Length: 122
Figure 1 (spheres, rainbow, N blue to C red):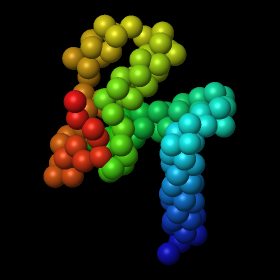
Figure 2: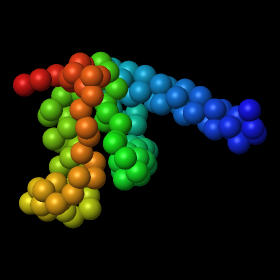
Figure 3: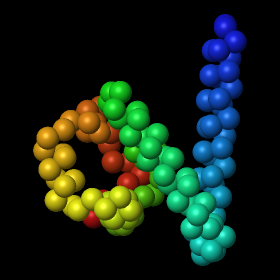
C-alpha cells in the first residue's frame, strides 16, 4: 500500500470518528434541551462545509444518501433546514424548482438501500 493510500485510509477513519462524535454530541444536546451549548457560529461552520462536501460529491456522480440510517430526521427538520439554506444564499423557492427541472445534478438514483428507514414519514 502506498503512502498516499495510507493517508487516505487514515483520513477516512478520522473523519468517521469525528462524524460519530459530532452526531453523538449533537443528539445529546437536543435530548437534554441544551441548544445553547452549540454556538450559532459553530453550527453554521459545520452546516456549510457538510453542504459544500455533499454538493461536490453530487457533481461527480450519484450523490450519497443525505441521512444515515435511523437518523430520526423528520420532513419538518428537512424543510426548516432547506428554507434556511435557500434564504442564506438568497435563492427563492421558485428558482429551486426551476433548477430541479433543468438539472439532474443532485438527483439520486434509487437503490435497494433507499427504503426510508430512519426517516419519519408524515
